[in-house]
Structures are given as structure tokens and as C-alpha cells.
Length: 195
Image (cartoon, rainbow, N blue to C red; front, top):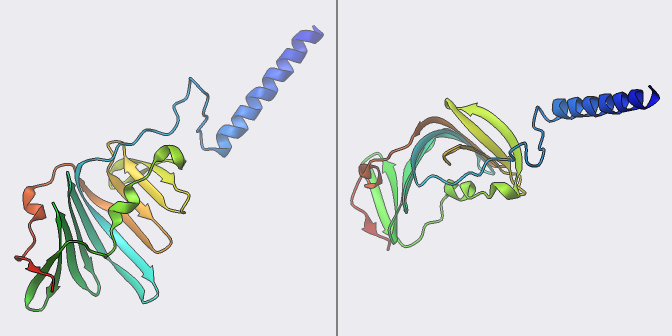
């Protein structure tokens, strides 16, 4: 009887320890071979996402929307902020920057561009990050990760970034599209070469 009681006590202690761990980790219990780890996220090659965007920098805060469209190697990032509207297009071997003025859109083409490029933050290797679990963003189940650089990124299971937070900015998806028209990558005006 003494041996049976000892086994029962050990089993009870293990069950209590597992329960405490589950509560502390919100149910994520990685048991090798039984529990899957963080999901493998492969970046989507085509999507369009409209984000609520906030930037905090030395010149003050900017709020507005940012739409990022990606299709293969083509990228468009379009900002509508309190201080203006502009777009950057990466098209084949050139970059086009456009700004909306009172007289309409003005676009300049060049080989490189230096404005904020949010797609750089989506190049995350989940296996090198802390998995934060899932949350609902724009009606999508998102898998969230924290990087070593204090960046939090959340992706849909098919690899679309729906949330990015750094020290300087936050962007959270409002609308998610999985197909993108080629029209999306046509600048609003013909681009003049950079002087």
C-alpha cells in the first residue's frame, strides 16, 4: 500500500506541475513528439493589406493608413498620413517614388530609395523568435512572434503580415486581400528620371 500511495503522490505532483505550467503559458505545452511547436510560416508571395499606421519619431507622431501590396518581386507601399500622401513602388530594376501635391501626383524614378520599407520587418525566421501565440487581427487568426530586435510580428497561417510593432511604429491590418491586380503596381503618373 505504501508503494501505491507514493506513486499516486508523484502522479498528483506531476499533474499539478503541468496544470500550473499550462496556466502560466496560456495553454502552450511543448511536449516533443506530441505538441507542435510554433508554426512554420512561409512568406506569402502575393497579398495586399491595408494597415492602421502610427509612427513616433523625433519630429512627432504621424497617424494614418498604409497599404502594402506584394506580387512576386513587385512591391507598392502607399501612405495616407496627416501630413500628406505618398507611395513607393519597387518595379523590376527600378524604384518609383510618388507624392501627392495640390497640383496632382508627381513621380520620380531611380535605382534606389531610402524611405521606410516595412516589408523588411516581415523577413522573420520564426524558429529564431519567441512564439507569442495567436490572436485575431482583421478577422484573421494570426501567429505572433517576438524577435531579438524587440520587433513583434504577426502573420496569417499563409504568411501575410497583419501586425508589426517596433519602438518607433505600429501597424495593424484592417483589410487583407490574397490576390493583387497588376494595376496596383502602376504609378499614378509617368515617372521622371531622378536628377
